[in-house]
Structure formats: C-alpha cells, structure tokens
Length: 246
Image (cartoon, rainbow, N blue to C red; front, side, top):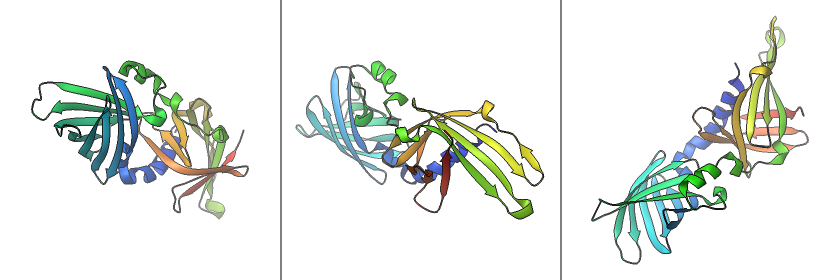
C-alpha cells in the first residue's frame, strides 16, 4: 500500500509528459570532456533532431532521428563540409554523442554535455559532472515545501468511501507519500505513514515533476499553489486538490 499515492501521482503526471516523448532532447547543452569544449542547441520536429553543435569553436549542424532516448544521424562541419556519423543517448540531463568520421570509423570521439540550466558550475571531466548533476541542481518552488493532503470520495450515501492521501515535499528534493485513514461502508483502515513511499520532486515554471524511485523516469503535472491549497491538473478535466497540513 505504501506507494499507492506516488504511483497515482506519477501516472497522473505522465498523461501529460508522454504526449511528445521525443521533445526531451530539445534544449541547450554544454560540456567539457577529454579536452573538447562543446555546446549544442537542439530542436525537435516529430522524430527529427536538428540544430547546431559547437566543438572547440567549430560549428557543425546536426541532422538525425530520435528513437525514445536514443538518436542517430550526421554532423556536418560548416567550415569544411565534412560529414561525421553520430550515435547519442539522453539520460536525464546528460547528453552523450559518439562521433566517427564518415570516411574512417576507426576513431571515435565522445562528447558529454548537460542541459545548461542544470549544468554543473565547473565541468572539466565527465566523472565530476556526474557527481554534481543530481537532484540538488533542480529548481524547487519553496511554496510547495510541506505536507499536503488530498481526500478522495467514492460512491455516495450509505455506500460512500473516503481515503486520505498525503505527500510531503522536502526542501532537499525528496518526497514521501502515504495513504491516510480510509473509512466507509462499515470498514476502516488506519494511516500508513510508517511505510511511506519515497521519491523525488522538482519544479520548472508551472510544472511539478515527480521522479519514479524505481525507473528514475520523470513526468510532470501542471500546478498552482495559493493559501487555499495546491491544485494539480493536466490542462484538462483531471484535477486534484491538496490542502496544506503543515
């Protein structure tokens, strides 16, 4: 029972974020790995990846296709016109591209970059970047920090049943979720706070992201917060209202 609320929140949020899964590649990246300083500005059109990649001040255009969190295609050196093949993958905010010459595939160059808004302040080596690019770099709206409760009502009259759902959003980006008391139709269950599920959270403008503790995937729901409570919604009719407990 301990992960019921978290699973509900994650599935609720993923209804929004899964509509354009390829769009996760879109954005600006930068990195410095193995002596190569790199910057990428990427655009997504359907499953096509376009944009510019700058390697030690040399500009190349990228032309590729996206398959989930992987991408393949070519880089064209704008100065010489030479083509390079690449394969790439995205893991959270980390973008890895492996490039080989169109004429000679024996030597490969690996580029490791991070989204600019989540990039470490000092990035001289991939191992250092990986150690610093965790959840601590995410933005978190301080107005959301605290314990929140949502009460779900099922049925009506003598056949009604209510269940409380709690989530605690902490300053360090961790999240706890548990079911509260359930009662109705002649039965009741006590709170399950002692077995709270754990996850992570962060915000980006009006989006509240939840990170699945098992798969490490993240999805978001739209949110608004005020003195009257916390509203989660997916831009349509699905809405959940939470009241602040503390």
